[in-house]
Image (cartoon, rainbow, N blue to C red):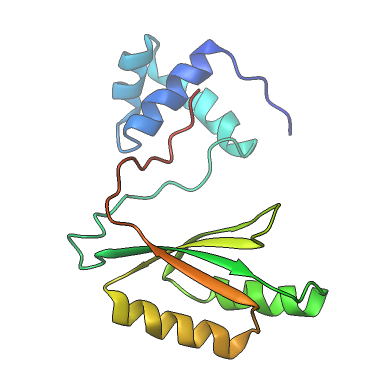
Length: 153
């Protein structure tokens, strides 16, 4: 389903990105509309897949996940079977917050959130026991300067 997004839709999306827990009344007030038209627009954007899963953002450090590693992976394997095993291994690991296939010298980059370096090593050992990789480089984030999932709409 294709939906055209206008400025009112963008206002609604910006309000929801700022705080998805807002009531319809609050969103309507922010965007200068009433509840029913806002609900109808949100429903249409959900049906079109523009608005996906709604969740809460947790504070990783407050919950004891103090280490964030960016893991660069190079592989000499590029066949379908290897890729399926690799993707299955990533999907079963809660530590992997993001995974991207890249163009260039590095094949994949992972964002891995764990409690500490020992927990990262446990993750690493488990991963390489399941899939063969040519080279792995782990970079520890010293400080998170900016993190957002909000799109610049």
